[in-house]
Length: 445
Ligand code: ASP
Image 1 (tube, rainbow, N blue to C red):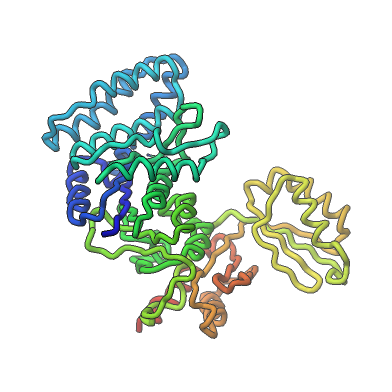
Image 2: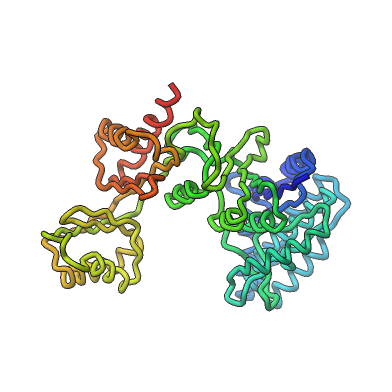
């Protein structure tokens, strides 16, 4: 019998009611042996996540201010869950130890990590599973970088001794024994590492949505759920701002060929989204759309450079990129014509050095014409099936042309996995809606 690693996000464990759902999910499949919880998240929209409360405590403690009141609110959250679950269990000793540690050494990462630590202990008690402290198995070097091989080795060894275990997400320890967290949302990464270490059949990531959506629900009403997506497609969509999973959660399982299933704790019967390897064999999906997803992001600027005979001038592109490099900028895209080249940059990093870059470009590449434009949005249509489907780009442009949306730039990735289009920021939402209509709604009829 294989096994599954199951990670539950903060909203899945925000109160006792959610704990009951989580336990039902785990107990309904005996392969769900290793559980990675986040700290309790928001119960309602203006609630505060326990992790944020712990960051506040560390800040107060760090400035020598009494943090008792702030910490009492955290105690209340856990004790509320313990009481509502009727558990004969107490975290009082841990609360005292954490408070004492914060008073003597108010470290931010240590404080934040205690949300998962306490929740892990509580969930282990409730499920009757063993508690395995992530600090003993997740290892960082002294610069704070994850030591993946060592971590996998320790995790494998430790978990081989447990039938079932709860391993808190989000943190580990450096080789010097200092608690260190991943960046926010990092329990996803812990889950992925554990899945790799135990060679899981699948990594289930339980959250409060039924998977990735084809488009942003704030733009498209009730968009379809993506049933299967490859790691590469996911990377393209995440770049464009579609977020459900921490970016660093991909590589540990991807390398081991373990699929990730995004599932909804509040609707466990939904299939969710399956994230699979890039060489997955897709036979039976004739029912799906041509594209997998659409995403868009605002906040880009373009430098348009024009110079006659640019194509035959040796080192032209290099000179342009050198100017960017010397100013510490990376570029996002670089579509070019015969005598024109455009460089797309992130506006927030470009603005502060804009004048300097323009002056340098005028001096170094001597363009016939140079202009910059701000307020550009990029949108991407992503899909592994586009490669073998004719007319995709024609349909894309037809949908935008009918809406009178001006296309400012086009870039088709060499793998034909995506087409990126630049439009004015004010056109972004309408563009996404039109493309959704063209590729999703109309393909249903
Ligand atoms: N609790 C942490 C956060 O709020 C980590 C996580 O939930 O994955 O960012």
